[in-house]
Image (tube, rainbow over all chains, first blue to last red; front, side, top):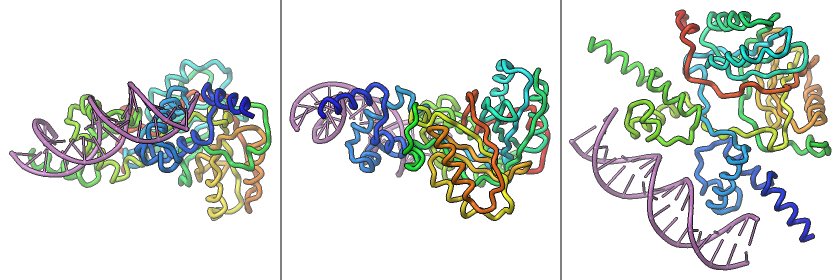
Length: 174
Length: 174
DNA sequence: CCTGAAACGCGGAGGGT
DNA sequence: ACCCTCCGCGTTTCAGG
């Protein structure tokens, strides 16, 4: 028993995330302006202990960054769209990477399915979207695109630390 | 001239976002742990002045929240996917809203195009994804889904305050 | 919007379980 | 090995000009 606990402890120290870490991550993912004292009350630890864990979580990369979420509409970009890009080859990374120079482009994912690339973009106007699509078509190897305009956003949040019990109950090799 | 400046100032005070605000938003969207002193150096203001503007930007909703970005893989959710949901009707909002109870669901958008809903989900395993799809199919009025698994994420960031000069040069009614 | 002062919270050192 | 109590320092935050 004692040995088991020791193993579990060292496992967490090296790279594991325990339940307390998850609660801390949950609190910070909802509002990172909270003081460590406030979080310590929520998780049942002292403020320095929380600080220690947060430092570890930052160093390990579990917390990638803490950023301000900006309202697109209020900074002049009311239009959100997803663009699926069909490409001929695969290794077109250089010109695709160049797209991140555009602040309108928020996400770029390489995917399975009918398309090879999914982009999430936020633009000021239909004309700005047209300009962006034009830039995409300029890229060598782009066969075509499909654009899905967002009419309304029901939910938009960052990754959550928690996992649904029903969905995690099944063991699966990591 | 003086009158023009007065008008511009009052416009900013009421609801506008000026260039300084954009630079502050840019700094905070990259790293919200920066001190106001650091930001004040970047934008050429005093720390209290920056604080005043940030307070205003929070109150107006331009800054929706400041949150910690969590690495999905390190909290046991290595699989990112986009799910397109075809529905029969439109007003299925109640059961769709219920999906946000699942921490696996990060985004839900109502869209144009071949699909009616685009969801961004992050799950622990293919089996967890299957469970989530099962939940979606349980919803009344869901005709079908298309899932795009993310193979690699090239770029993933929150909304940027800046706008590409080429794309904003064209005037468009807001 | 800038300068000065007070309160708060952060971040480290040390000891205990 | 982890957590807690105590303390110096930087930052935030509010006053006045």
